[in-house]
Length: 160
Image: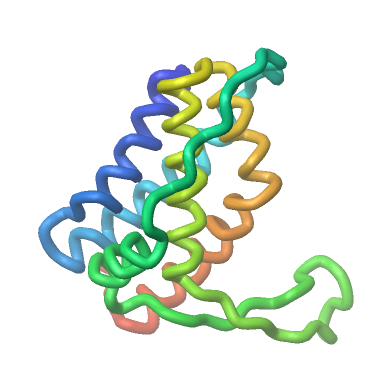
């Protein structure tokens, strides 16, 4: 996957969040596909750290407004169960609560950061941040959200 293809996936994801796809069902279907595309893009987004001095990105707009927009696009999504430690204490772990809307919000903010870097710093800087921030933050949201969406689709009988 070329760097422009990675950027296109990020743009498609942000377009979904900004404009929707016309119906809740279409929004949900697009989200599932775009989360898969973002996960695949991460594998190809390898870039060396760009140690150039760049300005910090601006603060991202009104988070309450963005959260409301996401809630409007995905009204069927909410809280879900999540194992707190999935690779240790097998069979004895505690459960936590995930929040699909917060997951989408966090992924969106990270993609805005990548978009800003792509347009205002360098492509290498944007790709490095995309790859690094997956492991540092948004990858966990993406993977937990994907599992929730899979289960939610099954529970609502929407597999076709």
